[in-house]
Image (cartoon, rainbow, N blue to C red):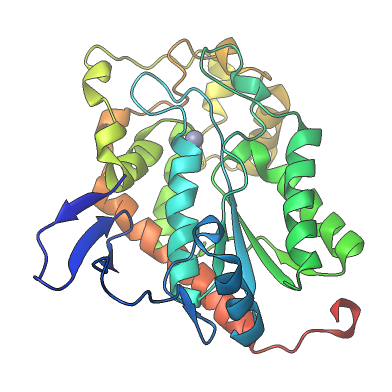
Length: 313
Ligand SMILES: [Zn+2]
């Protein structure tokens, strides 16, 4: 979704999500290739021509493909079904832009069987999601890409992603990584604490803040007008969600062992959590976006300084 803004007489500018300005050349201008001497000016793989891709592959000293996966699943009454994929696309694109990488979003759905009790959810089986990722990495590895980063916007995909990281290395002889972090910043600690204390996992303030920061036009906050906490768990289990307990390490795992498989088993609104999504803070989410993007971009920068190990040559 692009919004044309008033530009100079020679070059109009277009605003795209991620706060990036792209020049749009008038038709009469000579075409500028989207990869020049290995330097990309657009980052989605599907927007490049084959010669652009070849130019990037040949001239970028250390080509990296950044792959994003998310989901299409219920996100409470107020967030779009594509929340996780919409968000990860923003992350992946911005990381690719900062690192001269190619961005790939191979599929919209993820692994979401636990949300099928709510209409609108599309789930892939774990086998399908595994196959999508393996085929994506396998295809690009055939063309010579040796380094892959996977970014994930949906907790349900985590185990599949981690398996693919291992499996793709073995099968295709390429490096695959799913960098996590940063975990040590003040903001990261604050968010982790909120998650532990209030189980702010799904469609709560943290995720709502991300949506308000990245695609506010798709959020319908007024649908929360009469909203009340709908999380229904055994009170004894609820008490386990207290990180100040001395036995938290044990009871949090007992809690996980007891958590029911389907979302509609324990929430009627589709929102998990004991806190209120209306407390979302878009500014906080913007800072987390910047932290995470900067972390993964730095990961790629450092990674590129390491020569390709023998097993992957
Ligand atoms: Zn989500």
